[in-house]
Amino acid sequence: MSSVKLLVVNADDFGYGKERNVGIVECFLKGAVTNTSVMINARHTSHAIAEAKKHNIPLGLHMNLTEGHPVSKASQVKSLLNKDGCLLYKNEFWEKMTQGRLNMDEVRREMRAQVELFIKLAGHAPQHVDGHHHINVLPGICEVFCEVLHEYNIKTTRLPIEVGFEDWIVQEDSSYSFLAKVNKEAKCAKEIFRLHGIGTSDTFVGLSTMGSDMTIPRLKNVLSQAFQTLGDETDDDPNTEHQPTRTCELMVHPGFITGDDGGCLGVGPDDFSQSNDREHEMQILQSEEMMEFYSNNNIQLVPFSHKAFHIEQ
Image (cartoon, rainbow, N blue to C red; front, side, top):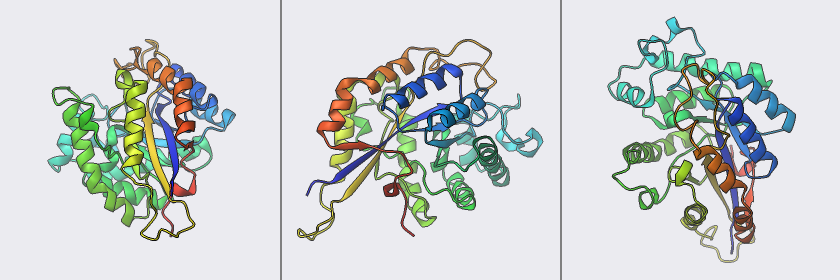
């Protein structure tokens, strides 16, 4: 029996810059994106949330502990900051975490502050919460993350386990070691999320399809592989009348090139923001060929609010 294939296409980094916001909105209005997650500590967060309200874009939180300035007072989250008062960047954050030098009470305080600010600006809790630089799957961080989501009755997160990303990203690539580490830690986080009643997609795509790595042939192949690994049968009973539901999240980073306006997260736009990579993703995601691929393969594009992404209590 053929399965029901549900795909969330989530655009990360909403709020980073107005150009990014405009690009994500365009993708949503053209049916290429179904969800977005906002960086609540970004310079153009208010603009992003206003656009989400205007166009009814399903909105989540991109929990950010690794870039820009904290939402909490700096004196309350000292272990999360560098000497300039900015959040530790991803490699330094991961290293400090593995050395046990992050204060988990401060991690919890900043996570709560970001959820509270989201609620204040959006008027509701985030539909889902994922992690900027995938901090939500880090050992130690993951448990605190789950506690905070449970506290605010948030039921869905990202699980960045991408089957076969090694086929597309060669070990010599500078991003390979980070992506391999993310994949490894996400496998460990899977059971922690489940025990806390936090739902995820069955599978995930996005580590091997960022920026210039996103091509139509690769995106088709990786998505096909992701759904194929899930199989088509719901159980061992061939007489079942129910079609199995299979879910996948496609993580994307669309947006127009960011202007040099002093910055985004208060520390200036990065190279990815000022390259053609994000506009390239927009073109791929909006292409007729991808829309035909979804249709021909019975892939339905849905938001995270779909019940299939939630664990039944």
